[in-house]
Length: 138
Picture (cartoon, rainbow, N blue to C red):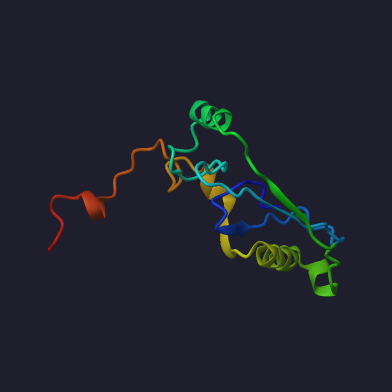
């Protein structure tokens, strides 16, 4: 339901589409343990920048192996409150999956990653007036 790989430090808020019917779900968590190259499409690594497809493909092809760990968790049976509230259902499953991975959760949507000019748009030249302004008060 998160729908994206990330820095592996936390889970973004889950989309609610899979939870709206109120039926059981099969949580599956995955992790890409790495030493030199983060295979996620976000952030920089020790080797080079991310989010640039040609550079990303070169980085993938230059690895001897890319490990993927997959854990199939127990089926989550929704309680009555979760059956009528997909946001609650998604939040509870997100927390469960984060515990399985040993990472944090965030209420931020993964849509922020695709936002043009947003904080994760590495190609955008952003100006921060509060930092770059020559007339900043002392």
